[in-house]
Image 1 (cartoon, rainbow, N blue to C red):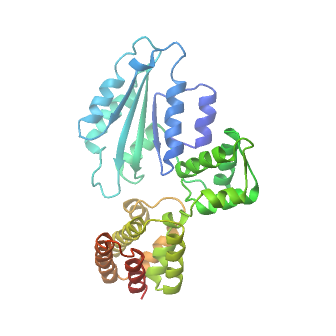
Image 2: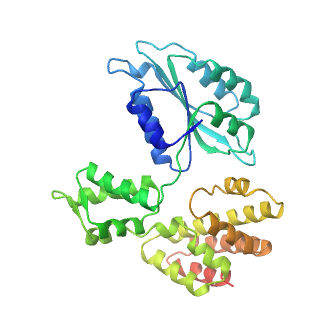
Image 3: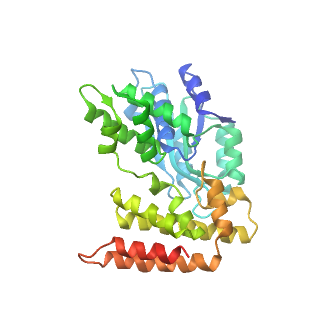
Amino acid sequence: MVFTRENLRDQLRRREIAPVYLLFGPETYLRDLAVKTISDYSFAPEDLRDFNETDILLETPDDLAVAIAAAQQLPMMASRRVIRVQGIRISASGVRDTVTEAHESLLRTYIADPSPSTVLILIADELNGVRKMGKFLRENVLAVEFARLDNRQLSDWAEKEIQSIGGHIDAGALRSLLSRVDPDLRRVSNEIKKLVTAAMPGGNIDTHLVDALVPHSRELSNFDLTDHLVAGRRTLALTSLKKVLDDGVEPVALLGLISYNYRRLLIAKELMERSAPRAEIASAVKLYGRGQDEFFAAARRADHGKLINAIQRIAKADLAIKTSFGGSSRLPLEVLVCELAL
């Protein structure tokens, strides 16, 4: 059964704790906050938490059995035990999966009769809903998806977060902040703390303070620059490149993002040529939430051979930047953009 974040919040407010949770989705800040909240609500003030909390990272096929065995142990001087299982991956391709069909019997047996004194929290870094194990977990435990917030939700969240730590922000400054920072709550939260600290003692955040302290990084997380390159929009690509570099982004970091996006496009292109389902492609390239239509459009119009050639050119540019002792690291990037945007 899949819950929303709001369902989970209401349930926890009623102090209703499920025996097994599955938390997944790309918004890891809220996911990790939910893990902490569930853990906190699972214990009474007098409980000895140190003896009853266990974190297990799935690194070998046997680690899940270790986690289940820990979940079956009785708590020590506490009302409950909390077992947090991290590193769960069930991907579209099956490559590097940490939970497979070989674990189904183990999970099915425990989920059918979970320990009444244990809260088992399964934390998924990747969860394909089409694969058998992904469907099994979503349908048989209390699953909560943490999707990216849309623009309205992000704005509301940021404003409340600022107020919660003693700050105030006007509408224009809030728009400026969110236009500069990629829509990842962990990064937004860090920028908010920096702004509120700088605004003390009054705590008033205006546009001038945002402009002074928050660099443009949203271009690093979106697909605009790569899309301009693939579409051959040289002028727009060069404009985007200049803006990002002028805002202080390291050329090596930007080149790494360009390389990452081109590799994702190549993977998507190859899967498209094999008529793979859209959901499988999105999972393979770790594409969640907003921006999917733009990405798929770019992948469809991209030429397979040009993508391979582009990746080779990017590697040469990377070498040129890293070996340019005292020289300009912008020039290799500018040349690369002109070469790719053909």
